[in-house]
Figure 1: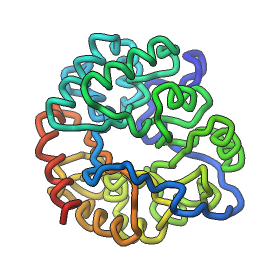
Figure 2: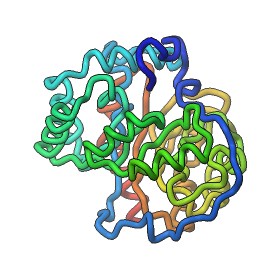
Figure 3: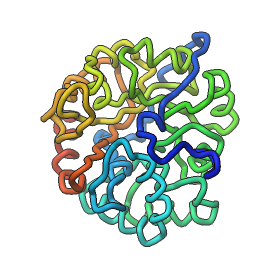
Length: 295
């Protein structure tokens, strides 16, 4: 995220905030082995801390005001708040987290604070495996400090060529998260066809919102799918989240398609409800994912 003077207006939606721009020439794909991790446990489920976007306002907000919540969360996330968040996530049985940018914002997290954040994660048995945010040097440095291998979100102003150079410089990968895109071709165009540094983070919920077949997109993107946001929505045309399996995103079909393409990454549960505490369904949704991964 840019400096406060150049931040987008607070009324921007999350889709606008993460929207990616630019396209480039297709690039060669890296071997799949570069992204498989033999140390990843069979239950590769992750709690995305962006689920807590409404925490600072009593679990009431409007999706169109995402940046309001983002900025309020940065201001509210001190040591006590981060410790409480980690405690509640761990109490729900989660062992890994995707850290939302507002919970570890470059504007607020210097090296000493990053060490503290990591120590708190360790104390609660939580492994940080991804960073949900925009691609910029500052967020890549945060990933380096927290031991996170990739950023998943929006390209911001970067072309695929500039994004690749930036990732290579910092040794951190980037996966574009789909929001407005309605086809695999649109997603892949944003990263110039993909390469060893640039891949795809499939957001199942947004594919459902766009009325797109998630399984078909996953199969087309194939080995470029290097991260996932496991989310369900009530109906196409809107982005109202719901319990996994209760909506139109065909989450079960998406998980099956990921098996078909030999996906070796993590399954990050994402649910940013506007009217309820997602922690109330955290155990149910974790077990829902684990059951289908075991099958």
